[in-house]
Each structure stands twice: as structure tokens, then as C-alpha cells.
Length: 364
Ligand SMILES: [Fe+2]
Image (cartoon, rainbow, N blue to C red):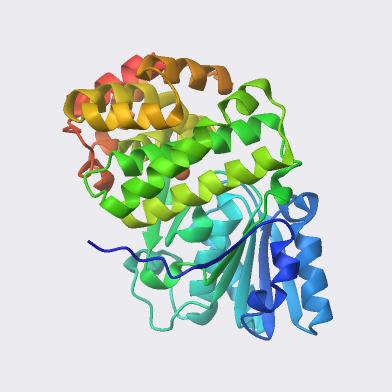
């Protein structure tokens, strides 16, 4: 069994300011954040205060939008290199946190071409990175994965190495308090998907299963808040913790076919990542229940949900599914999703027929 998590985790209200020396991984910081996430969450202001009071120079890249492309990250990496950055601070949801990992690689490897990132073997080690999540879903702050859009291949592709983990992550629910309701729900469903896909993954271990079940217990207690759309500070803290726990376990096991089948929904229909996963989860679990019934029972028990069907109803109520799909679309997508590398770790045989059935029952 292997369990590798090189990220120091600080959790709790005001953990950035209270552990400010931990944020200082160098002397010149390149801050990677979204167009609004850093400012709206209050995280950027906290980081700037810490850097200013410590006389650390910094530059801010705040143009990372949803679903960042390889090319965007390459350009930002060049800018970080020109600035002479010696560490990176990622602030935001999955998009800036994933982009920051690529930028940390490009910044010290200017001779690389954009697509070289997928070789996962870089002449110089990526810059050290600190993460401050402002959504509760991605778990990117504790994973080695970075999922970027490759326009030329018309899909998203991930890269990862043991050096693309963040050195330190600050988990403070207050940064998620201003998130709009639908983003809160979509990202929460992404976190749930990570917990479920890791727990049911053929690579799961005693350690990951223990953490995933704990994450599901935390998540399950927030179903009421998610359904009603009213959140206390404690709810925000707990949803963020469930997301971090989800990240910790997928860093070990990877995800499985819910994620690979969700990517075309995001790429072709612009469906938010968490929502895309949520549309497929019920049918995924209905299949998993046939091969690993005890595990599916235990996960439902930890979520506090009676059946896979009931979980499906909860997911439908959380997701704003106004999309329509055609059989021609799903038949096309399944041709590539069935070849995805995480189909191998599915708890049932992820054949063309099985994935077609999941797509059709979920979307048509
Ligand atoms: Fe995800």
C-alpha cells in the first residue's frame, strides 16, 4: 500500500494570517487567481497583507478563467519566469489551482513547448506552491493533478507528478462564504464524486477508504443545507473539509469513469464540472451496486441516504439540469471516454455497452 501526501495542511478560521510564515515559500511570489475569486473571497487581500508585511515582492496573474487551456498557462509561466518568481500562490477554485501547477512547471522550464507538460518529466523541478481554495469541490490543493483544456484535442487532459503537489494548503471556509448557491452545489457534488469514485475505485486502500467514508459522513450531514440553500459558517467549513478529504483520496486512487465521462459534457456543452459528474453518479452507482454491493451499502449509510435512487433524487434537486442531449452526441462521446485511462479502475467492466447505458439512462 502506498499513501503519499506531501502537502502541509492548515485548517481553520484565519489560518492564512495565523500561519503566515508557512505561506512564504520564497522571496518573489507569483499569485495565480481567477478573474474574481481572489478578490471576492477575501483570500487575495489576506495574502497581499501577509506578503506586504513580510516585504515579499509579488506579481498577480488574475486572468485564469474557467477551464484554463494549456496555452494560457504557458503564457502565464513565461510571465512568472520574466518576473523572476521563486514560488507560486494559487488562490481560487479548481481552475486557478490547477493552472498554478502548470505555471509552476513552465516558469522554470522556458525551453519546454506547451504540450511537453504531458511528458510529466521536467528538466527543472516546478516552483514550490501554496494553495488557498475558495470553492469546496476541487480538492486540487491536496492533489498532484492538473486538468487543462487542450483545444487541439477537443477535450481536457490531466498531468501529474509527485512534484506537482502543493507544499502547503490553507483550508478556511470563510473564503467560500460568498459563493453563489449554484456554484456551491455544483462544487459540493464534485467533492462527493471524488469521495465516491475513490471509495469504489479498484485502487482503494484501507487508508483511502477510511478517509473517504469520513468525508461522506461530513458531506451527508450537509445535504439539508445544500437542499435548502442556507449555509452557516460551520456548514461552509465542513463542505470545504469534505472537499479536501476528497482530494486526499483521489490523489492516491485517481477518479474513475464518472470523471472521464463528465469531461465531454463540460467540453461540448459547457456544463460545469461538478454538475456533469452529478448527472452521471446515480447510474454509475447503480452499476457499481451489482459488483460491490457491500461497499455501496456502506457509502450510502455514511451519507445517511437510503438508496442509490434516493441519492439520485437529491442530486437532481441540487443540479440545475436544463440541458438536452441526443443519442448521436452520446454515441460519439463514448468512443473516446471508453478509452480513458481511469476506465481501468472502475469497479465494474467499463465496456462500450456499459458506458453507453450510463450515458443513455443519465442523459437521454
Ligand atoms: Fe472533479
